[in-house]
Image (tube, rainbow, N blue to C red; front, side):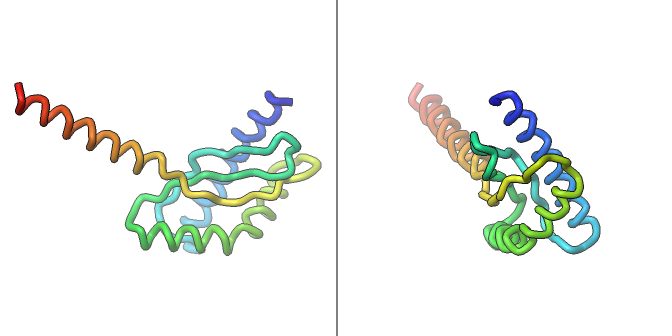
Length: 119
């Protein structure tokens, strides 16, 4: 079951990225959004879709609003593209990993700079 869940997560990741890319190209969606991961529950009833947005805080808010508004349409397109008995109910959550990594990198750079100044 775990292997099936992992395969479905990968499939959902690819398909949702494709759907969002097409929506952006057609003009029904704006911004630079990348789906970074999908986590499906053990019972396959729910899925969390993690995404990152390249841009300002305003761009991130707009992307969250657009994804929420288009969730039904994206789900409908998934049902047409993926042929499984039941498509999980999904929610979108921003992936702040790149921002956290950037903050950690800045901290390490500052520590290294301070260490060089001491020595």
